[in-house]
Image (cartoon, rainbow, N blue to C red; front, side, top):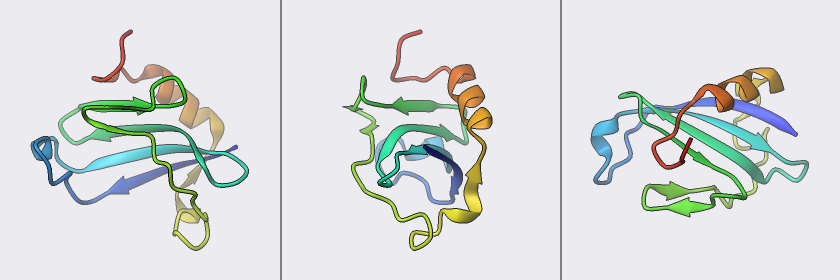
Length: 97
């Protein structure tokens, strides 16, 4: 697995646009598929997606296959420990607990 923390400088453009810009944490498998995704918005709202929670009214787990180099993710790679600690510490609007 590989891990990334990438800022998204545009707001959502939907009914939740007021949440503001966001930072996306992604866990990618060996083929570049997104296994886990955490979105943390400027207003503090967070959303989590993985195999146990693929989608909901706010969005869903990306089904894109990413090429780390071609899609510009390489500069945003982080250590597994940073991803895991953020994943564990973040309470998400769309998840219980």
